[in-house]
Length: 115
Image: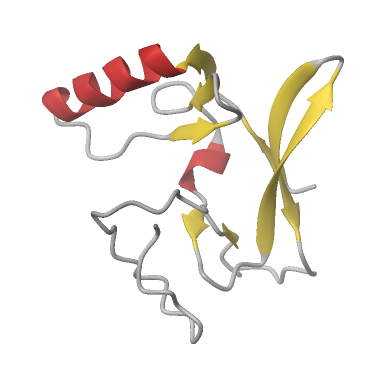
């Protein structure tokens, strides 16, 4: 285990409203992580360092949803030993959409987009 992704637990309706508000306020990035169909963790304003972990098409970590006392949590686990000063990354696994988000991970196996 590397770190838990923490933030406010919200429903999809609230996540949609917040995403729009963040755009209107000029907040460059929002940190919304889907747990399941109904639940999102919003780390935009009250998260931890996990929100700054970048995407990679060839990551050294992965995200896993676990249950602790019937509460779902997102935990980042290492795939391999990670050296000091090595960037921690995981695959965001965004859903496939028509409008593509360019990937800039630089991996040899880069897919070219986050979705």
